[in-house]
Length: 240
Image 1 (spheres, rainbow, N blue to C red):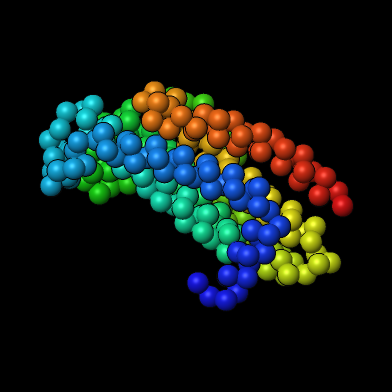
Image 2: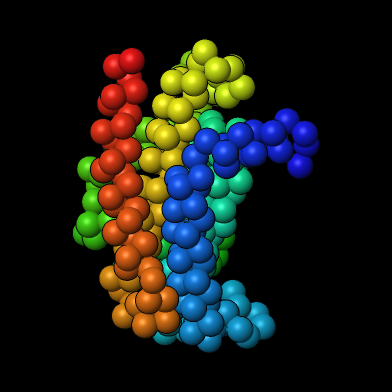
């Protein structure tokens, strides 16, 4: 890690210790859940996974592909966290969008075996197929999140470039503290939203996870409360 990134990390840890602590605990709960899902997926512990999945029954194949996509989503959540805490807030949002799309792919493959087969064969999953999404992936909410992430973090448009420049220009400038705080809290809001959606989805579909990770439901509630509180905080900051 370069010097400037270390300075940003130390500054954020100093200014937002509680925010970062909740981020870490939320990600840790997701990590534990994902590891349990991998451990109880026998197809992932055998050689020639691709061929075995193609020859497996529909239920095993779809369930295993869901775990693979969830793990991919988790990987990009980790990347988003690292980028956010070292000051790369626009690239962080790009990783969050990939995490969301992998989460969406996981659900699609869990209910559409044809899409699971496409994935195993190396083809792109069709996210326009007809499926009834769970509440965590409700199409309206999903579209809203993806639009936010696209506007500020994915495409090299003015909004994304401006956001990164404003953060870099305010993080070490006392006069611009309000801008710096607003931008960090807004990005933590996006991050925690993604974490709580994924965590809630996992807990809802596998009671074993609640037994194995008993702290996860309470952390999910803390994340929801943080999201609600930060929305009020952002409104106040935007009026300053």
